[in-house]
Length: 425
Image (cartoon, rainbow, N blue to C red):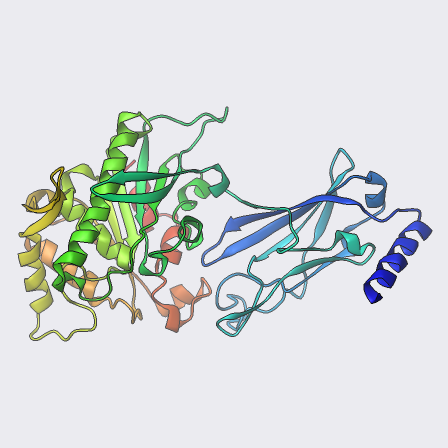
């Protein structure tokens, strides 16, 4: 009853102002993939009666539950709070049926309250409640770049995996042929999750496109549990890691055959578990890639994390041996052990990335990988270490220092890791 009275009151107010209550046909929410979450850029409302939008201005709209993405506000160093100023600007469409409201980008999931609870955002119209919008009532959500990606599934080596592929386009909207490719190895938090969760967990698919770099980007959803720490002690887990990589390589070969990507310009990057998978991928197919970026890499080669080094240099010694050992490859029937091309592996340039305070995958892994490769002849490896201050600039407190992929995928400035990669295109 109260709701009916309120709607009648709003309708009467609108009529008194010479404007009928809006009859909403659809609402569209436009988002982009942020550092750690989807962020809302704009909300567009389409009505069937254009007269209901006449006279509306930015002052008639306000947001609640809208806060910056991330875990801390980079401006205050505190937990994100609702914007004091929404920065809302409202635009009427030329057809008179649409009004677009945009302002400060905010977290699509709403305002954080502690680590798990969220307060949903809501767009309010003080002049007409029929124009109120929430994530739950929106007709459609749009995601920049991802909406233009190709999705599908691919089968190889006894597995079937879903993928999402971004192909850059020319001014006419046609895919540019024979472009470079970056394949991203997902982190353990995205293992055994749906494809959209994988694609929105970080900026792996949108980073290059947002920067305007004409490069394809590929990510696969790995539909098995995370291989966890010290998986190198379990042959079956390592065989599965290598099987997933074999499937990805086979799919990349189809892209090369179709003329979509250039087989001489293949790059691989990944974070956490994906950083470890990047290392194994390069051990399997070192001759196929031009460069790689292992970010805060895990240890699917030898045990490093959550174990104690028995003597100084043990991790390096173990890795030197492993890099001259064997990996699993698909022989058409099964995954079988095959020797590593150690020279091709150490000739492949790698740029390691780590945060100094990372406690999930400690920086000892990057140091050990680099030193072992150096002892085997690598001369082109680099390491970028992010300080606590570097991470805080992206809204990441020390307890989330593991998230070094955030500054990695955001920074294309001179001397950055991503610039190092794109300079090789």
